[in-house]
Length: 317
Image (cartoon, rainbow, N blue to C red; front, top):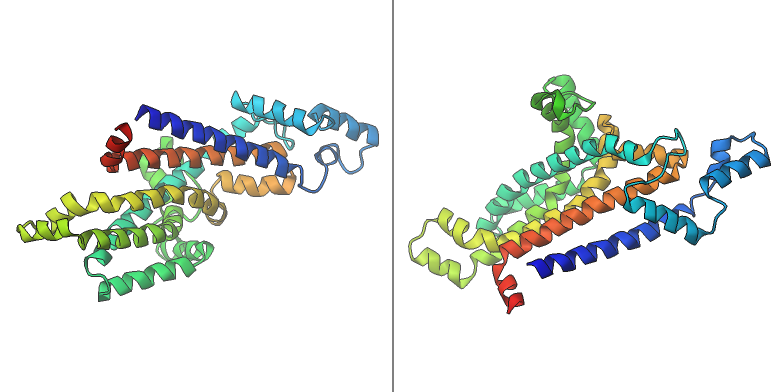
């Protein structure tokens, strides 16, 4: 396990390095000059040059990257070009909102996909399986912003059960925290549940058709016992893998959902950052999101090793 973990951590570092290079390189292609944006349209050439020198924009690209990457490793992601606030401080204010939304949406996705995928697998091709398949297709075709607006109309305006907008931290109370996250998490979680449902249905249907499961049934074991002891663990491997891959999609979908529900997270920050051409903040958002996705994939890899102990034994041999 130690060797496996070291290899995965090494791979994660390579991914972070590649993403940092790409992120820094793409930031150079954004039209406009940040120095002009900061100095103002009516600034003189001397003033613009002074701003450019102060930001280090007059240095070679390689020097600028090494300086930025070296500082980023220590947690220093630079300073916002818009308000001179440290980027790390800005991200720490917004990151808990997005992480809370993503984790709540993941919980919703699991609560939806686990029972639906299991029910669909019990009778492949049956009426319930067809209904669930149609429902997942409808969920894929439904825009998240439209679903969010419909939920606000139904459960925040027509029947005022949940708040329509805003965010309350957990320190304000678990009830207020959960109430403000309920509708955004449901909006984001419905779309995230589609692929796990399909993967669980396919994997579980295959496992239930194997010889050892039929043997367990022939021995008189109850259907629930067969599922719990013999089928679910093997079928869980692709299910958990897909859940890990959904992390990146949840962060991407948070941009729209946060805008609909007025959540002050990384999504709304990214939108305003692009408009302001605030490159340090934009780079910080990308790197932070990459770290979250890489950490989620690492957790999936560890879960995969736990679910398939035979692979670990074979590797050790």
